[in-house]
Length: 113
Length: 268
Image (cartoon, rainbow over all chains, first blue to last red; front, side, top):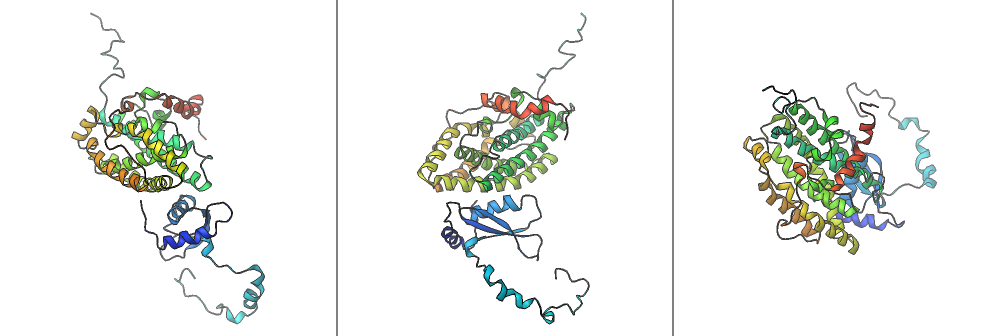
């Protein structure tokens, strides 16, 4: 029943600080589909603590199979770039073809690149 | 003396000695069919969206388990009844579920308390059944055990939150436990069928499972700052295993069976 979730108290504290709208704290859910594959953002949900977030993530995002691992992260723990910064942050990468690794051939048999 | 074609010796009625394996499978299947239906009544009504999905998810697990147990029951009976025939075309007196699972869903605390008591029971029972000498029964039990282990994690976590939550949540879940306690005796009461199945190595020693169940239940109840009576219930409600039910089951079946009975053989 009691699961050991790393930094559970930290997570709960983080989560508690962002519940300003009367809702339960918001969590972001990441799912992994296979060994070695990256955990990818699946969506978000409300939960009062890390264990409940993990259970809700299991029921909402993993109930139809295809998931072998779950991460739940308090939404407040994520630092996101601002839309206003998108020019300085991302535009410089758009017009420098020499930064792109497109001049190399990926060897056959290499997956996940 | 001419034998009438309708003489009892010619037409064995339903009073023929029950097949204990068939009865055992009905008990296992009906517990899950009825409890799954009770949980499904929360669909669209749970406190929050995530819990709505969680309860429906448990309900579907139980429905899946009921399907497997009742399908095997139909095969064992050998009268051509499949899981649908057993689920939708039996009367309340033919259902073999314990009374605990048929009680109306009550408030959220009642549903959680009932679910927790049943989930712990299911884990212990399915664990025992997974080493049954009946191969198919053991395989179904092993599959269902995985689901039950998640169910108890879910309901146990909620018992902790409600018991150690607000004054109101504590009061409600305590009242639910008080009301439900007398229905737990039936879970571990063995009759002739259970004893026959135990002797055959097919079923568990039910009364022997109670101590383990109580230890697990009390651990969570204590941590949830709730209390349980010190003894096993003295005044115990039972009869479900032989077809004696509360009035609640009839209403549940009326709703559950109406579509199948109004449109026999319908598919979609």
